[in-house]
Amino acid sequence: MPEPCRLTATEAMRHLRGGTLSAVELLESCLARIAAREPVVRAFVTLDAEAARAALDRAPGGPLHGLPIGVKDVLDVAGMAAEYGSPIWHHYMPRADAAAVAWARAAGAVVLGKTVTTEFATRKPGPTANPHDPRRTPGGSSSGSAAAVADCFLPLAFGTQTGGSVIRPAAFCGVVGYKPTFGLIPRLGPKLMSDSLDTIGVLARSVADCALFAGAVARRDLGDPDHKPDRPPRVGLCRSPSWPQAAPETQALLERAGTTLAGAGAFVTARELPPAFDALNAAHPLVMQAESAMEMGWELLEQRDLISADLRERLEWGAAQPAAALAEALATFAHLQAAFPQAVEGLDVLLTPSAPGEAPLGLESTGDPVFNHIWTALHVPCVTVPAGTGPNGAPLGVQVVGCRGEDRAVLAWAQWIAAALA
Image (cartoon, rainbow, N blue to C red; front, side):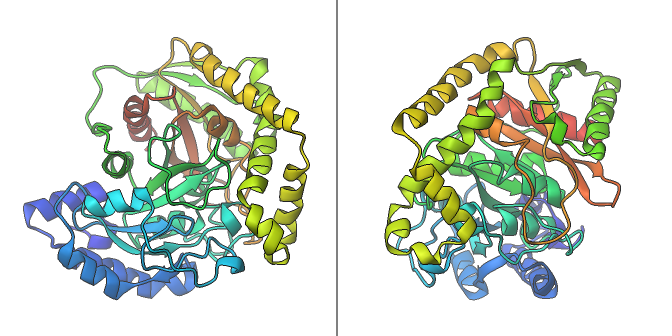
């Protein structure tokens, strides 16, 4: 058996249930890994080893029993400071868990700490570095969660996505990211920014781990993606309207992935979204910024000077949008959400880029969500799986997208694709 901290969640659960590993050994291995690497990676806002040890003693039995988890610092944890990536909320202490955190604890998970987020899960990055190359961004806004999972600090972590904040950092850090169907994981308790877009997701080191974690907190049966389907998938290679932003390594990756999947038995065909879906490129930022301006009314009105200049500019632009423009953008969302199943008729999933390319150098930006925001606006499930490395040795991922509500099938096909590309 490898070091316990390097086990995936499903591997760890098999050892825990089989008696070849104790929950204490797993926790202490994770803490030792954090002590060795956190000065470089800086994935945590708050790390509370003693609280985790105490929680382990009283953790209930359940599907996540004994598994350490990280919680992105826009989700509240009772008795653990929540800062939401902003000095405005420095030292704020919630009295209650976010619903997703409460259900994770009820399933036996142990909260190890709060992971770094960008400012209100939108703009200004935190200090987290990419574990594969500390000169590069880990992506965002779920920066700390992706880096912590990638560097074996813990097997599971919560993220959130309004644009591309689960999928992109997972791809940049070489792990699996799962953005479920909108609303599958309960949203009560996070610092919401856009009520029409914000989605709680999970990050892990295998697709099966994502199904285990999300299924436990959503109280849904998401199946066992490791169970081999009785047929290969029908896959549509979708460059998406954002294809001009794809780096050469991503263009080559999608072509190579299609060839590999076809060789493994999948039915692979090119499938682009109809031109009407291009409207999401304008509708998504309008909805995101207009709704965020409303959600952040108190901060804008009372703490304006403590909001970063970049975010303040975007929020003020959103607040200035006419009500009719927001209504039209939301109508675009609704129309295209209803049209999506027909656009992918005859396919099981689409395969599309997770990000423009490798994680960019520098920590001042978290990269471009251009390959993510359309799918977030459509409310569909997305899974990014590792798919090799780019020209500089940094991780690349491909994104598996399916129809709303078909999460169990999308996870199963994502695992099939991940195994074929490994």
